Image (tube, rainbow, N blue to C red; front, side, top):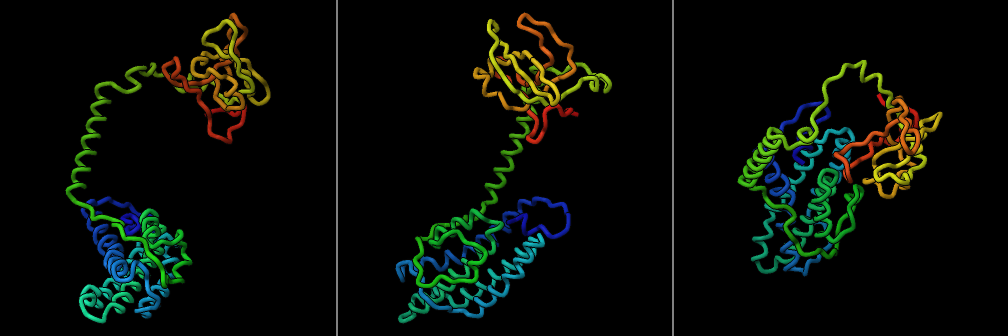
Length: 324
């Protein structure tokens, strides 16, 4: 919601101002939107066993909410989220002002005013439901919690055209709590400590490079001489008499290659490799081994043993394509 309230149609940099974030969430979402439900739900639960009465206690507000829907939808479509949030919060302000003016908490203390209290609070819940529908594209989790309270199926945009009448609500539970600035400060301090710890870890050499340092630099021509290709593993099988080797039959487009690879410890069921794409050095000089000729080398990462990870290109790559 915070970012949506800042995002217009242009391409602009956005800063996360935590003080502004706390104020905006507490003021808008907790103080305006959720506040409507928390104000009204208790009176319906206590005064009418949680059932919303039928009737429209504020037709002018109902009409205003319906009239605003096309403009809010247009703002979403235009990715002018800030305008959508402004218009939604404008409606929330009107709903809260109306409820404050009607003051059901005062009417509840007066004899003969219970029907009026129920009508006001049912209207308030209907207005809250409208706001939830308008905010659902930005706040799906809040919407899901609100749907549980409202005792309705997942809300869709077109549901803003309908009302809840003679409808049973579930007991109200807090849908959102105010953000405590002290907790935000603690979270920020903790993140700084985590960053410092990770930097210390790098400085003290606990990363992968400390275990396996970089090789000496090479020039571009040396690198360009290595012909890397996409290969399809047609067949993978253990090599009899070899503890570490698998025999791979590779398709590199217009030809097949036989490659011996020391990855058996990581792939005890070699048949599972069949049909998988991998990467290979295709112009490596063939190497005569006790078990046959190895015509290249497949690419893998890891220190060895069971920690060997055969490299694969993204889906869509084709056997024989050059890796650049």
